[in-house]
Amino acid sequence: MLALRLARGARPLVQLRRLLVAAASAGTGFLLLCTLGYALMHPETPDRASLRLLWCLAPMAATVYFAVAVARTDPGTRPRSGLATIGLGPARMMALSSATTALSTLFGSLLALLAFLHLRGDLPGTPLNGAGPTFLASDQPLPLPATLTLLALVPFTASVASAFALRPKDGRPPRAGRRGDAGTRAGAAPDTFNEPDISDIPATPGSPGEASAPDGLPDAPPVPGGLPWGVAALAAGLAVETHASQAARSPGLHLPGGIASGPLWVLAGWALTSLGLALAGPALAHLCGKLLQSARPGALRLLAGRGLQEEARRIGGPLGVVCAVASGAYATAALYGGTQPSFGPLAVLGAVLVAGCALATLATAAVEARQERSESIAALVRMGAPARVLRTSALLRAAALAVVFVPVTWLVAELAAIPLAR
Image (cartoon, rainbow, N blue to C red; front, side):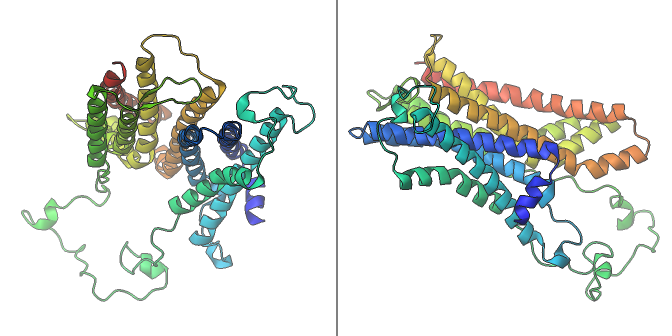
């Protein structure tokens, strides 16, 4: 009930993001129901029905990824001061966020079921007059357990993923003396094993205190550790594609929705290259921030570069997913070799879901990064920084990301498309 009240009392922009999650869940649920309809109409080919079910994993993963990003930016389920005293600590707020995500995705699954039944002719006012495509299985009764299981996949996965992403990282209270007077404010006893306070001792020339960093300059954010795994996945994917394209009589796949068939291992290699690009995204974004601060930077480039390094983990992953989707679109164009493809409605729906969820996740991550920068932006405004400096800094960050990510995406897409074009 509390999750429902928080969902109702949110701002319009938050409600829009939740409606987008519901729309993505509805599209994915409709694809799953169409897979069930195809299996009912073609019981003699269970392998193709299983392939269609596996084909739905891409839009399902994109929907869950988008739902987790929306849950992270939901202001109604964030831990705030004073809520722990009434029993709403980090663990309870995590459960509320998971419940809110489940409500949005369940609403989308319900819309998918209503649309599927409407097109089948089970509801009054059917636009197709009962003569729909074969994947609707209009003349076959829907098995209730299979229907409910497929519709529950997205809500269950999204809620579990949201709970895992928002779990409390460290439930232990901060130790006294760890950060200034944090332990004194919390009422804890002072730590008797702290180092002695030497702030009042003047530093003589050549002493170690003279070489220490100023207190106002924090250390640079650590480099994300996904680059080695991303490069390894990219190399493995390209190697698998090249080996499969050169092998004679490679096993083929007949993909649904009008997508051309191709060797199994070539498509698996392309999936590995996409995964590698997504894993390497945070490290590449951190590299962009480091490049901005190189070669005697000024205040503007320092501000943009340090901000980009702080946001690398938050923006780099969604940006890498967008680049993976772009490389997949390029590889699909190379697969057809310039011929005009004839995609079916399910293939178009799946492509729109994957691309739309990737772009929406990137926009949501940008909103989250701006929310995390709100205190820093307010401090700069109080210090007299003009709005032009903040806008120019944002443009510098976007330009640095484009300079690094666009060539990398093009290079990976070219290398991945070479075996597919043969």
